[in-house]
Length: 287
Image (cartoon, rainbow, N blue to C red; front, top):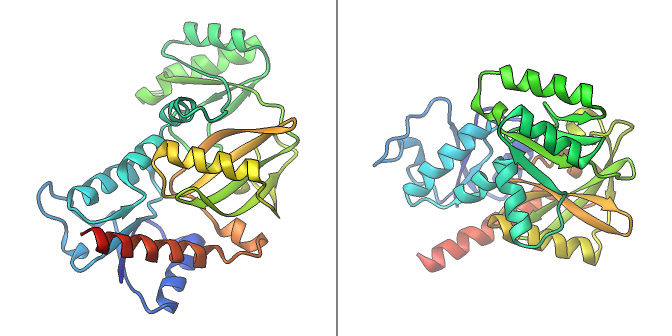
């Protein structure tokens, strides 16, 4: 098959994926979205002959719009645009999980700093303030006092972009110094790792220590339900341990897997390509 890979920068994750596709004899068409012009009626020439498209855009804005256009061209794309739109927006992500009865941290949205402060005080200290759009733990704040809350809210209110005026406030979950990332394909776990750090943020991108862990039946059930809630696809589901259970705090649609591949016995890019081949065959059958 001819696999189109949408990108703006080729990272280690994309290199692993491209290598696996080529090793299996698949044709690969790399599509740098920074250089293309997407018309509302006809796709760019770069898409000629492409059987399926994989979104690996680094920027959320590009991912959300490009997948919409590719889908409008009737070219199969993973992840699908609605999944990208839900996962890219933390508010929509939380709503989708809650509507599917997936356990997720208590969350409120407000639109003024006065209402945000009321929300923060109702949660109590500490609580967490996050940007509605963002990744790698950037611009997230653990708020420990009213003084800190007032300072952070005033700062956000003065920033220019409208997204900073959407205050996404969440309860602080007392996790045991780690969280869990599960990479899954249409709800089926591929592999999982624990990300451990002395900092309250445990993202691998921020230097957290990673180690492979087994996926329990309870974790697998939550991963399946969370994946279904956002529309399925190639996803990273993030869980936190809460005593003897778990809560799902986020689902990621352009999931990075290099850190997981380094610590897991599972060949993650091979599993991803297995899934892509199945998706492409299913598209051919239904076409």
